[in-house]
Structures are given as structure tokens and as C-alpha cells.
Length: 195
Image 1 (cartoon, rainbow, N blue to C red):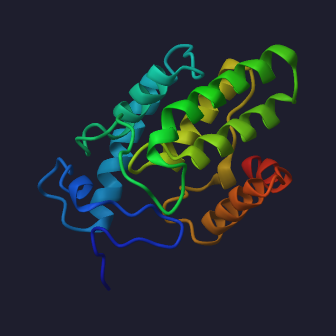
Image 2: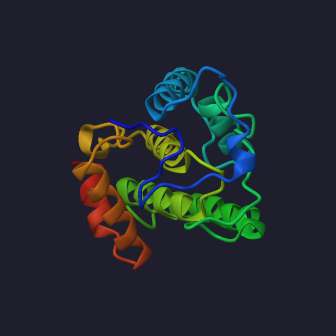
């Protein structure tokens, strides 16, 4: 059984050599060790994030959230990516596209454009589509979305009730729902987030 540290699947974001050099814990040599270190960091961030009301529709907060989620594992945590990816907008557009998303989110809420679940699903999809960070975008976007739901007085999404890092069929359903949303069909994502 192999467990290469930087092995990627089709839906994962590959890291550049420079980004790989940003790994902080020197003991990590296998993928499961990286996953465990990131998950421990994320759990700490979750406690911090949900301890009080947060303004999720704020760029500084989203960067801070990413730093809290991954800052004990990666030096670049909380910093926008500078390189192109197999997913996401060109790196030079991250700031503008994110600001547009945050303004859209405020407008959707203020005008009741969509029901709360749809606001959150659309926010999540667009945040993942922008892919602002070198890695951890899906996990960051899921936590940010759950924080947005909390601010809207709604329960968190179930996200298929599993950890989507090693979830097989559930992860495939999540990625398929995101791809459907890329094609302007939000319905599969709305169904998945509460499954």
C-alpha cells in the first residue's frame, strides 16, 4: 500500500514545488500524516470560527479563516495563490472576482434574491470556482458557507455526512454537483449539501 505525500486525484489541486516547500511540520512524509495534521488544524479553526458571529462576506475574514485552518501546516496559509491551477480563475483575477462574490452575497441577502440555502450554495460554488488559495479551497469554502448559514440563522449543511477528503462516492457526488453548478445548474448542489 502506497501513501505518497503529494499524490493527487482528478479533483484535487496540485501544488507547485515552491508551495510544497511551504510545509511546516518536518515529520510529515506520507499523505495520511498530512491529512491528519490539516484536520487537527481545521478542528481548532472551527472552534475559533463558530465561537462568535463572523462577517463571512469580508475578504480579510476569509483570508484569516484560511490561515486559521491551515496555518500550522502551511507557510502560505491565508495568502492568495500566485500561480495558475487546473481549476479556478487566473490568479490576477482572484481579488476582483472575490470582491464581486462578496458584493453579490450581500445583495442576495439584502434583497432576499434566493432562499438562505440557495444563497449559501451559490456562495460556496463561486468561492470554490474562484479557488483563491494554493490548496484547501473546498474545505475552506465549506466552513465559510456553514458560517454564512449560521449568520443567516440556518443550520449548517450536512455535506453528505462524511469527511470529503477520503469519501470516495460522496466526494465524487460533491464534485459532480459543483461541475453541474459550473454549467448553471445549481439543483444538484442544493440537493447534495443537505444529503
